[in-house]
Image 1 (cartoon, helix red, strand yellow):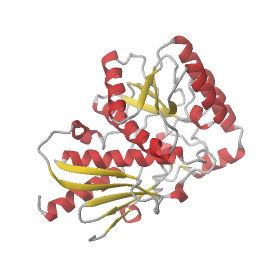
Image 2 (image 1 turned 180 degrees about the vertical axis):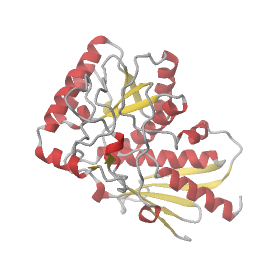
Image 3 (image 1 turned 90 degrees about the vertical axis):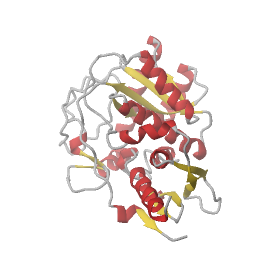
Length: 327
């Protein structure tokens, strides 16, 4: 591969990394391109201090960006070495991808490249068509391939537990003025804003959503564009993702696993909606582990199904997140 083609492949991978999902669309990353490397750094000032005091969701978001970069480079036929947290002296440097050369070996993640542009967080009403068992099994396998555990919520008592604890966590968070203030800061009806959650991507909240598993109330300005009745149900396809450990390295790998699952869902024509309230509140987090008998540490709950399309959110300008060097 010529130097020009390599530069193009690296730049494309970096751009596709920026299309990853992130908590409240904070996009908490910066990327730097070298002659044969991509570095991903966490942007600490974009961490949600109230919702995410330990940086779990921020690191998971960066893991999603890392996985997108890996997918893009695999699709370009490149052999890549991934170093996670390569330099203890630079704690914000969470990953370095180094190109080792071209390869003829097929990497299954390359098939997910087409899904990156189509992936959305969908907060609309899902229909009641069951997700086939083979699809759920494929999602469990996708998570496992990235060292992440996927736990389908199938037993009736587990579904009831998810609904009850999610409602409790949602009430606890909404009762906190600091949480509500932070939420207002990261939601907007300004169509030119390049980060945060836009009104076009959230339901209008009137108290008549009919949710058993509450969708987060992003409608802080009363201007949500999506229909009020979302009917997020405990009877729908729910999958809990987690990791064996509960530290920054595990959160990063959890983000890679999450994005692999999200892209697999998208590739198969399904919609997905994430829930993290039950994870964010320490009380419900621990109750969830106990009542479901989990050995893993849960990080995110996914609702999977069929739903109308939802608009994409805007992204920060590349000049703000991407830099290049010759080294």
